[in-house]
Image (tube, rainbow, N blue to C red; front, side, top):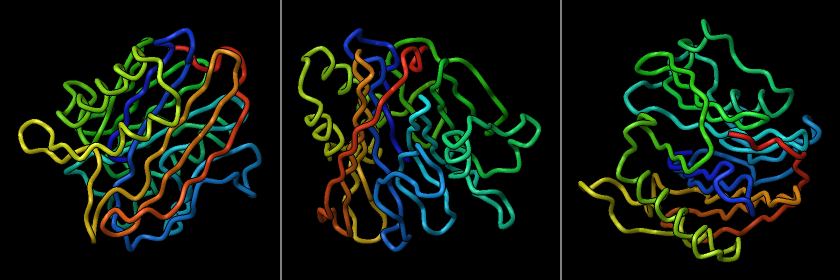
Length: 238
């Protein structure tokens, strides 16, 4: 992912709401949102180059999302950052602190009984996330980038307005340039741009929905996928 906003136990109606855009080269192959055949109970899209994923949920009550940290590219022999999400969703496993530096620069947010932020750049940092609104893009958690602040504020407005879940996709379609000339939430380009917009929403009854809207070069629509899942009580807890 490249920009994500999360509401973690920020509203009694919604223990977990996540909205995010994945920006990537249009030439990089990926598979749409689906239940993984080789990882029962895991729901995510799939990077067909490295085999990992950028965001997903599991029926065991786990959520994870990863973003790259700009300026710290992955080395030729570095493990895939997408494996951080896939491994956590599969069985709850996380890399040991001493191995985090082996990855290219990343920020990882996991939710499952507790919400936690991890990064390895510019230094290893692991911290709990309190209930509330959070956001991350390709930089630090704090202070958030203008792009992150824009999406996080939009999510807060959606919660206040109590709109339908489908309208969360409108937040991710915003092409308004962020403050300081930073890229907008949605990037429309023929080479590198927003490849998919994803929503994860879990209500107070534990009913979850994950929606993915895919885009091709120039922002051309390539279809939607909407799948339901069950979320165990107490899984989203800041």
